[in-house]
Length: 226
Image (cartoon, rainbow, N blue to C red; front, side):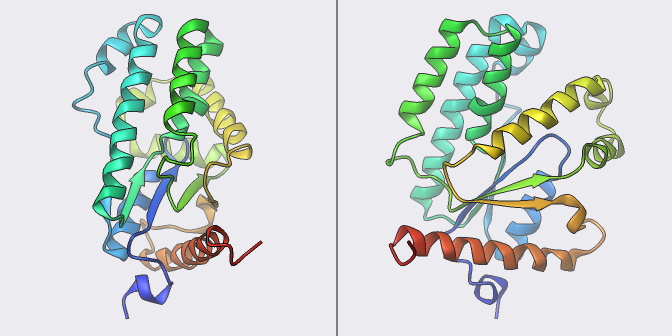
């Protein structure tokens, strides 16, 4: 019996992983995909035509960057469903508007007109019954100290040069966002409760929870739960 059958996870499931930088999204994405024989969906950073310009001038390019992300994530979400599911997705379409675009607006690096245009477009494209929302969003959380420890451990130069205050702000913005998120079912996982790097069997702990959540979600959608 394979792990999909053992934990009652449908072969056409689409599972999205969300959480702040350094929390382990990519590691969990790969581990779940390997365990379930699913495909992965990662953000395509190398082909983004706005990223370098954005880092050089936040105020001028923040709107362009967010529109680009919205279009690319929308197309990717559509592609996964048209393919027939069976995907683990690293980062969700919902984080862009709930965290990053909102942050630019509040910090003054996106003006009010652009922010209103962006959020209106997001609502029209994504927050409708016609948009193919994932079966489950897994939100990775942990203490601020644990997350900072992981960022330092992986040692990416740009992240090491980023002020601690920025990571703290992102930590709180993610916490506020997930507490009001309701676009699809959410499974919250604390990174202190498993260790995929040093204990591969800890994926079973996660798969058991995933299977339960997806089954409950599908029963609710079909009217078997009220």
